[in-house]
Image (cartoon, rainbow, N blue to C red; front, side):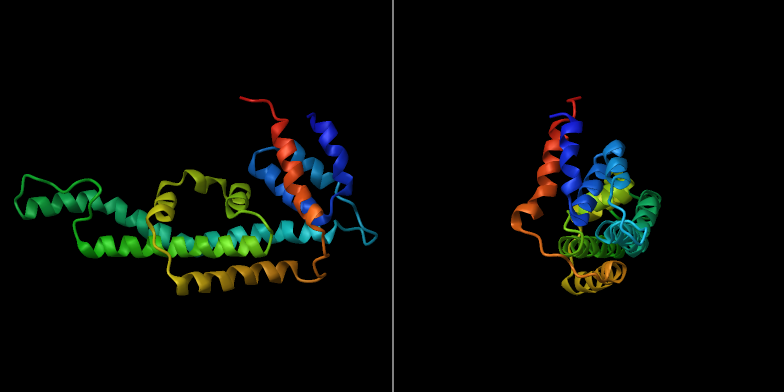
Length: 218
């Protein structure tokens, strides 16, 4: 289906639906559709963008920033441990006079591995908090929000290792959730969410599916 035909349904979108479609367009790198959704967003009499679009759009940026600030110290600690691991392993091998150095993936001291796993657990806990926040707030998968506002994380090896190997802690996750949902609520605030029928709540995803299916195959 041509993009021009899909866009004929855009005028009937609510602000929330328009926001989710714009985020999905940003996440898949479709700048044209993202700009179209922004530029055609209805302007209210107070000469501002639809609050159901602009508030969550701005809040999603602050949500991603809050998440990044929360995980940065732990990711940095993991990178520092990995940076000195090989040199320490060689030094230990020399000190104990062994010809069998540690495997590259091993830490020479248990405390280093414990510290690495703790940091990975903090990152995993934060991600689960973000997942919960995104479900309650913007109504998007956390991967979409991060792909739109922090795309570099998708190819960040240390971060990806933390998500894969880290074990979430319920208390840390709850603390991170309270912080992230607080960011979202502070930015979106009133007006209250307008009730939408089940059919309309699914319309954004349906339009996104038609939009992506219209893209030429690579």
